[in-house]
Length: 514
Image (cartoon, rainbow, N blue to C red; front, side):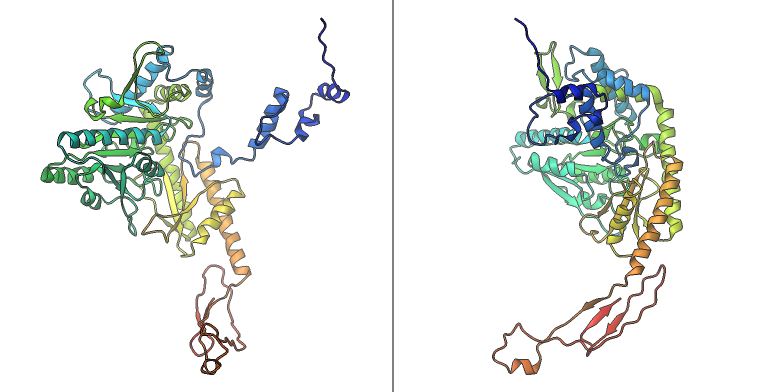
């Protein structure tokens, strides 16, 4: 039997043309809801997706993100070589498992965990700090519940105390795992959790107090040492043993290298677990986080699962199961390649470039710097002008140059503030910072020209029913009349300062602002 495939003239002609853009495939609509019926050449599939992805922002110019956007080619190569390995298959990929264990040990020692010599640390690699926080929170909840059960006390209303500046993953944990989130509100000029207020909110149902080492809003470090001391006093007075978790997603790979004297980690006795993000200042692409516990006693055994259908007995405590090994391999590469010295130099460079950006912003005379010198390599700033829209307008203007600089309002109690934020990563060098300052100056001139070109006058009008109107029975109570006499308003254009006046128009009842 002879099998033959008959092609149409159009298909024969199309296959003879090597150019993707000369083929019919680029004219076909892209599938959005259903899988296409037919296959297409691999070159075409690649080119179509490649071209569409060009409309994404440039990761190197994405100053909104803490996540690493550049690694060395040798590390990229290792990651590609490891993509087809499933991280959870410990028996099949014992070297990958060994690399993960080495990373846990290295991080635990970096965070001053109280480990005996050559003793394996307690921790695990996660998809990111979000999963790490979920695991740490579950450990605190289970340990608290076990204690309450043993004491014959209710265990159905656990809570966590933290600041209103926490990342949304804490809100997710609270909602997903039915834990009340008690937030310490921020205040003007103090944009992190106040330890004193936090300890005041602690009660017998508090499973832990969560401190942030590197707020995503301003980059500031919370005072974990003061929190530890105040909480220790309250525990002694009440008989509780409320612990501390440190969310060091951003600061965990910053503080050890440039603030070694700062006590925030396992040197403090109430700190029972810490999470860090390898994909932030751990210098690895997105997809890797870590959670480390002080000791075995801080991770309840009933949360650890033992499986053997992949080979030998494998203990596991993660929310996710199958995942690639690439980020684990990349993290170990960075530890091996950079060493303590390398990380220290990278973070120092980031801090110097952040200072350079601060100096450039101050020279404009238009901004208040909200971030602190002691903290993350992050610059948070807002306009001195109280017009909140200016921050969002500047963010939009910078997008025209490719920069992604987020603008956002602050949490409750300080929501009147609109802030812009630049995260200074390893790949944001001095030349790029200088170019960013230049583009900010240019954008400010454009905003000023737009504002000055069209003077805006707003009126607040008070309307009242006249005596004459009230005598007419046909009129309703909510009706009246408004009369504005011929009015002239004069202004003088000024390049930088905005003039604000109250203009009396009629009987002192109507005011205009220009």
